[in-house]
Image (cartoon, rainbow, N blue to C red; front, side, top):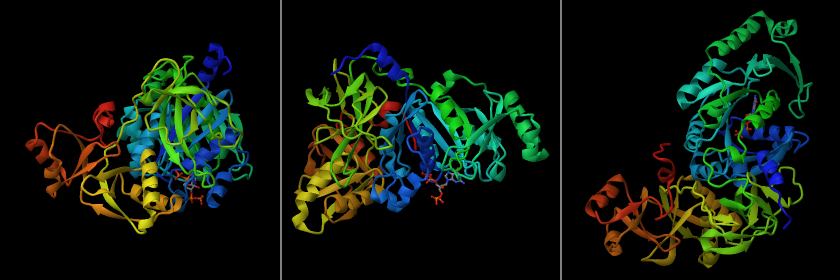
Length: 544
Ligand code: G4P
């Protein structure tokens, strides 16, 4: 391993910006991602993501099912340079059923960009994801998208953000016009209007930007007297009545810098990116540091495991967020859970532009390691002294079903598929101690996970299954001595064992759970396996 000087490490950590985009489906996340890549120089002509998506090959949407349904289920990671910064963009799944996966992804991010459709404002999924960011006190940036369409009044929209999400806002820029007349933004830091000109490129290439004065005749002519007067009045109002900018409050997640633009036409994308890299924290500037990112010792945690991303290889990747030091391909590090050293084999880079394997990565970066079954979500790997990162909670499943196989000869593939998908955290698998290994019960946080399970078992493991839904709503792990047979005889509970052989109970409803709590005061009923933190243990009470 080559020597690592503190100077190099400091420089590399300081220039990392690792963030996720959160939004309601259709707000334009895929489009914005693509445009950020365009401005980062990672792709040269926008439209490639779109056209690849059309060809069922989106850069950030790997899975066929996602493409069929037009939703983003898995999370991917894209890295691109911008100016002197190295930007890591984590893609979060947009569907509500995947909140657990989304949560894990956000645990690997240092800030979030909240994307809002100007016509729709704060939508339900935006709100949920926002709350998750809030729990982690992540700095949140707001990008109001689709300004090329007529939408809500920007001031009204900011009010909605503030009232609904209980966060202060500071528009870093202000839209000049809207819909067909959306021509640019007023940059409050520069005190200049940035006029955009797409020159008929339809958003495929970078737009031309020209800086002009707010009181220039040209702007008056462009907007016409009414709209011009409106814009000037709004900007004046912001200066007088708006919140003051405070980097400290941004970093504490109390104030969101707001940007306006149109991902489709590229208007406002670069002004956003320029300010974002300056204002977003580096890994060393987070408020809840668990290790010093500039420590020469390497450490990181597994936040996601994903199998079969490339059907040609059928391999499995563990996604690791590097928390400190430098990663080098094939280095040795300790897997803390098993107290043993392992070699960290780094697969092909996950860069957007399919570059060659990168040999080194630094705190803030995400790496994908080949995983022959070594890792579990939440695992810490490190050199130097042991660290154990907290931050990846488990969600208790709320939907349960018995897996029924159509072709009994495929049982071996089924077991393999279920094992691997449960290791990924895509699903939880339980067995019934009274029936032996024959009937697996699966548990999920959302029903859509069941569809994904079926689809993936069929496509990746060649096993067709049926799922017979079970009428239970809660899973609880039991601490204390209890008579399993007795619980299993009652029809409002069912005893199962989890993949580690720990006993747990399914409850039909709230009543059944509280009945057992009252009648078995010596037993503890935990929403997650003992020692595994749930959301509330990590962050206090939380409501979706
Ligand atoms: P998502 O990943 O958040 O779900 O959104 P995505 O980028 O796929 O965008 C959803 C729709 O909104 C797409 O239209 C996209 O073209 C459009 N869109 C994104 N950004 C803008 C914008 O700035 N302005 C306008 N006017 N539209 C925008 P679609 O009709 O569903 O798909 P397509 O046929 O355009 O590909």
